[in-house]
Length: 474
Image (cartoon, rainbow, N blue to C red; front, side):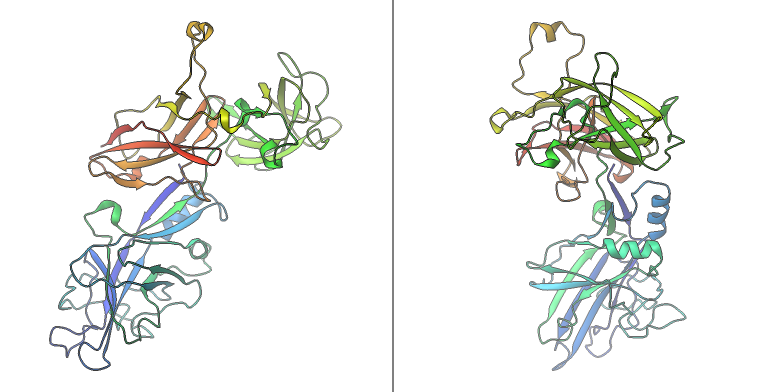
């Protein structure tokens, strides 16, 4: 699973806007229990040159993110992106267009409060425009914010959701470089002081009844294991260097449980290739470039990987994993036979569509489960031979670039989109048995039916497959 969400644990709207009498300002009002968050700027409503502002305060459980990193649930810094997401709340009032919202770290502790009134500002309490808490006022009215680690998003039509990559800020929170007091969301300084009103932008708050529209930080990373053991390619001068690389994995298991190799731990391991019919024989084969070993490394507990470019024209090779001793190396593991093929496929050979199936999908899951879902795939125009019909097992086609998305079937709401960008956070893994992926069911709201859908990238073109795979979460 390459997605983890951390829903806001506090939010509030603070304002210095006038009440209905256009005389008294709501600077002491609190809206911490409202299911809506609101930011705006109103110019010259009460009198010529009068200014009214509303800003959003929002905090997230960074301690949970830190705990997940310690537990290995999310990757280390540099291997994960953190996305701040807030969902637009439709309303019947005026909606601004062509404006920019600033997201700035708050520099002081604040209280959420219990107020609800967002119309007359009659619910007094803290935090508010003047005070951060019951004992401490803001240094500057409207909240105290850091000028560094700021972010922004432009809203052309006004109805857009807010979605900003705040990875550097999240990492500063996790490391303690910046103390986490959450962020403020508001218009830019120039838009909060001009002669044009921007009224009013609303988002759903953490108390919203709409489960997926509550504000959250989403951790995204690419956890796909791409084991080329079943798709091992002979090097060719006609291909870019990266396309000649084959990534191999070593899974060190004891009684079904992955464990680190004691002599390697989280360090470097090496892999060499040998010829042979049923087992590795002879000397190490030269790799592309002349070396006879390729350095690999630690992936996760008990899992190691290395990339090799095959320079010897053989039909079959064996991988042997060892240490870096040149005289008497310690061999840790010998893999099964690897079939080597020429990289001769062209776009004309590309299969247009696959028949796919999740072979172990259940009809229902609990939110406590994180199943490993296994795929079977074959090309749609596949024609079996007499041998394959008589065989007890039909070969599973491995798809190198396959992605999933998830929707709620009752309203077709997209819960998780295709992660096909630079992070590729919904890319499927594959090994010698085919494609697979892990999915954390705790992300989903119970009591609904959901459906997986898949898309394949081949020769620069994304092709969505027609099948839906439905299940419920209880």
